[in-house]
Image (cartoon, rainbow, N blue to C red; front, top):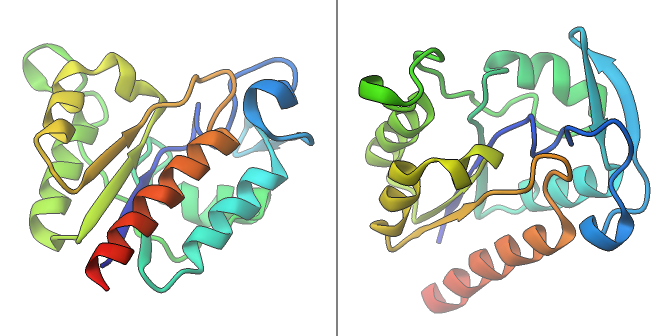
Length: 175
């Protein structure tokens, strides 16, 4: 079964912290920082390696779902070492967030899931935990998983393990 992973950047790959998050809370021991596209980026090389391992799987497809849009592939990917240069980026009205206009990321992922019909999907975004409508939508999708990391830590080793278990469980059921 195929899995599409929709990946945010800030608060996920890029930990929003002035110092490196702890090994105890993230599972990542080493952290690097560099300016990318004028922004300070703090990432764990072990996280990037884990995502590259997932992306190398034949049953997994990645798509960027971030305000970085195409810059995630063109600028961020080579800077941090993620093999995401060829991943497509979903986009939408980035000013649409909350209120009557809804969240642009929710609208973008809904449309993509409806159009591409992945066997299952994983939506990774630190803002998910604050978006009740988005969480409610994912819960209505029997083939969906939402992962909302703490923005100061980004995606953790435990999160990666949860995602791998989700993918493998479906792959085993399909076999």
